[in-house]
Structure formats: structure tokens, C-alpha cells
Length: 227
Image: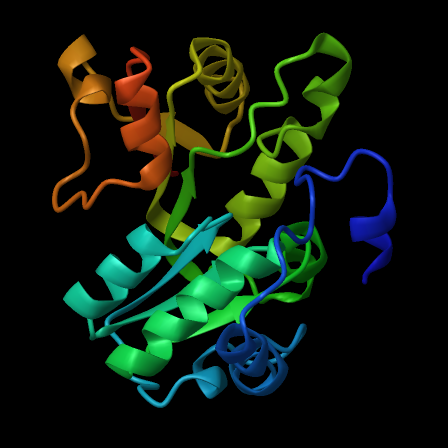
């Protein structure tokens, strides 16, 4: 485990839930090392399709439903998925194996350890979907979206690249807007309320979104462009 993962204040919570099934454990032990990102290495070199149309990043993919849907729909796009939660990683690995999704690579540790090692202007799109809101005041410093992390993301995003952030927690939406709007690197694309209440085109949904809607919370979908 990295130093960042061990520190108090990491943006993610637990690393492992219930015991993995034998097949899942085999995937984590054998498949994960084969498709794990190598910090500091050339991004295209990780993928068979070196001439992919774009490269996308999803931070905190949970069970991997959204990432897998994007990977199967956009086979001409290379996708990097970051998720420290072992059980979520195992679920995505199973789908990658079953569907032969060779356009996915993963990082199973703190994304803030990986990002500083990547070249400038690496990504054409970044997703942060339903991250842990860390709702208590004393926990808010653990939120993934911070001035520092937005600056880190801006460096690895191409001009014109999109940062897509979704959450059902109003306080976190306001938190993200405040930080993105004071950043010189991002422009919020919304011009009316409908723009942030409407899911993204081709949106497959996530289990977190479904739970939020069942419990009466209204999701918001923010889009920022790297200027």
C-alpha cells in the first residue's frame, strides 16, 4: 500500500469488503497485475490500440458499471479506471475478462499517487461519479475535489477536455462548483438548471444513482471544460 493510501485523510474509505470468491481472488492475483498502470510510463504503451481516438479517466469507478458500459460502447477509446476498493476492482476485472475489453487499464491505489507521474495533456475526458461525500465538517478535507486536486487534474487534461462530476449530495455539488469556478483552468458549461439535472448523453446509470433516486435524492451532473 502506498504512503498516500496509509495517510489519514485519504479521499477513499475502506480498501476491502467481504471476502472475495475464489474466481475473483484469482483475477485480482493474476489479471490485475497484467493491466495495472505503471506510474511514469507512456500511456499509449499500455494499450493494444495505440491509435485510439481518445483516452479517458474514471476516478473511483465503484462496481465498474459505468466504466464497463463506456468501454464496450467506445471500443476506439482507451480508458483508465482508478479504484482502491478491492471488491469493486474484482467486479470490473470479471467483466473485462468476460467481454474481452482490451481498452481498459486500471490503478488500484490512490489516484493522487498516479497523476503526478503522467505526462501533461494525457486525458480527453475525466469522470468523477458519486464519490464519497465525507459529509461531516471534520471530514471535508478528505473530499476528492479540492483546489490542489483540480490543479493536478488540469495538468493531465488536454485543452477542451471535459471533467464530468455527478453526485446526489447538494452540499458536495456546491463544494465542487465553488472550487471549479475559482479555478483558472476550468469553465462550467451550464447555462440553465436543466443542464445539470439532465444525465450525460449515453448515460448508463450507476448503482449509487439508483439508490439515491430510491431514497428521494436528486442527482446533479456537472460538466467543466479544461480551458
